[in-house]
Amino acid sequence: MTYKTQARLWIAQRASAAVLAFCVVVHLVTIIYAVRNGLTATEILGRTRGSVAWFAFYSLFVLAVTVHAPIGLRPVLSEWLGWRGKSRDAALLVFAAFLAWAGMRAVLGVFA
Amino acid sequence: MKVSVKRGDSFQEYEVPRQASQTVLDVVMYIQRVLDPTLAYRYACRVGMCGSCAMMVNGVPRWTCRTHVDRVIEKDALTVAPLRNLPVIRDLVTDMREFFDKWARAKGQFSGSQTRSDEFERVPPQSEPRQLADAGIECIGCGVCYAACDVVKWNPQYLGPAALNRAWTLVNDVRDRSGLERLRAVSGDAGCLACHSHVSCTERCPKHLSPTAAIAGLKRAVTKAVLQGDL
Image (cartoon, rainbow over all chains, first blue to last red; front, side, top):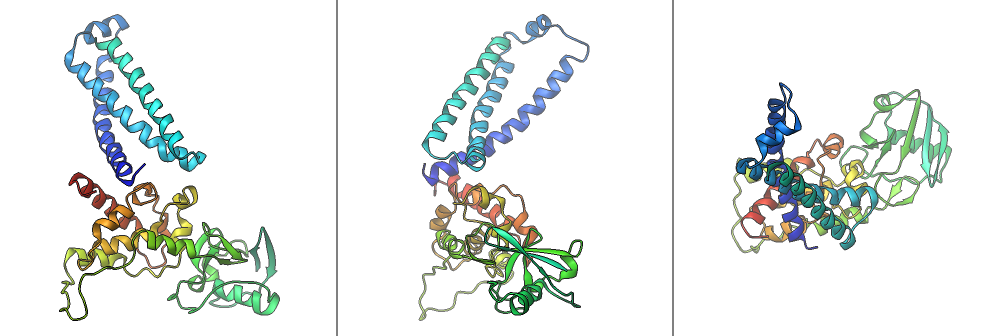
C-alpha cells in the first residue's frame, strides 16, 4: 500500500470519527427520549418504518462505522499481533463488508 | 546503595557508596573504575550537552549525567539498563544507527536552493514558522524520546519522535526546498500518522521539547497537502 493510500485512510478515519461523534449523540438522545415512558417493539417499529429521514441517518451511521472500524483495526492488528501486509488489509476489507452488510440489514429491518 | 546493572540477559548487582550530589553517571563510573572494569557504557560531556549517556534508570529513560541519585532511588536501590527500543552492543551501550538512519529516512537533512554567492535569506525571528522551528530545534539526539515511545516498540518501522520532530523543524524552515518530499517521507504507516499521542516522548524529553506537538503539526501538514492534491 502506498503512502498516499495510507494518508487517505488516516484522513478517512478521522473524518468518519467526526461523523460518528454526531451520530452517536443523536442515537443516544433518540433512544433515551423514545423509551422514557416505555415502548414495545411493535410501537417502535410503527414509528420508524417508512421514515426516509431516519433511514438516511442510520445509513450514514453504518457507512461511518464501515469506514472507521476497519481502518482503526489496521494498527491494532499490526502493533498487537504483528499482522501486516496484504493479508491483513484483505481481511479488513472482508470485515468492512461484513459491517456494511450487518448494519444495513438492521437499518432495513427497522426503517424500510 | 544496591545497584542492579543490566549486563546481557541478566542483571548484576553492585554495592556503591552514597555521596552528596551524586548522579547516576557517577554511580556507573564508580562501578567501572572501582568495582568492575569490564562494564561498558557511553558518555562524553557529563553536563547534559552531548546526550550520549542516556540509559534506563529504574525503568525510565534519562540522561544519567543530569539525574541525581536522590531523585530516583527507591528503597536504597537503583536499576540501570541500556536504552529501550535499541539493539544493545554490550552492557549499557546501545547501537544508535537505526535511530539516526530514521532521521535520514524522515528527510532530516536541510536542502536549500541558494549558494554561498547569494544574499542571506532573512527569517524574521517573530514569524510563525521560525517560532515553530525554534520550539523543536534544540534536540540533541540523545534517544530518550525514542526509548520512551511505545509505538516504536510495537512498530519497529516507526520513525520515532526525534526524527519526526526534526522533520517538523525543517517543514517550518522557510529556506528549505524539499517540503513535499519530506511530507511524503513522513506520511505513511511508519510516519507521523502512526503516533498515538501517548505523550511519553514529551514527558521524558530532558530538553523539555514536545515531539508530540511536532508530530501533530506534521499530521496537519500531511492532511492539508492531501486535501490540496499535493500528496
